[in-house]
Length: 152
Image 1 (cartoon, one colour):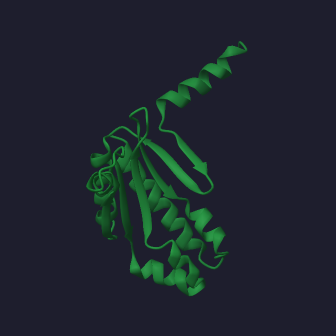
Image 2 (spheres, helix red, strand yellow):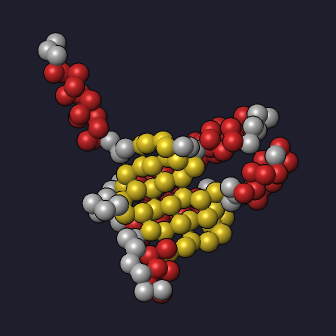
């Protein structure tokens, strides 16, 4: 095997799969769809799993109302009062981060991204160690919703 083969494999993996980056607990996934379609697909996946979409905020539309320009950016606020309440009985302060949120946004190069807080980060932030099954379920659900929203 040549020295360039491993590098070539890494490059091919990078361009063939969506990018999942974590930055201070934030998961960022590239989307193959527009901001609107990615947000619609995410919301559909969440409601299809029995979660409630509490609100959708179009930040670009809000910016336009005050005479400003912002690339397409939409916030989806969603969750389950049953799960959220269980987490708040472990540490009520997690309510600052609940309901959960997903941000769909377009970067300066026109690429669309889906971002959300990593459950590991949230559980760690509030030292919630007594809800491992909940953390596993939330993590799996977010990955499923994100995959549905960003990939054909």
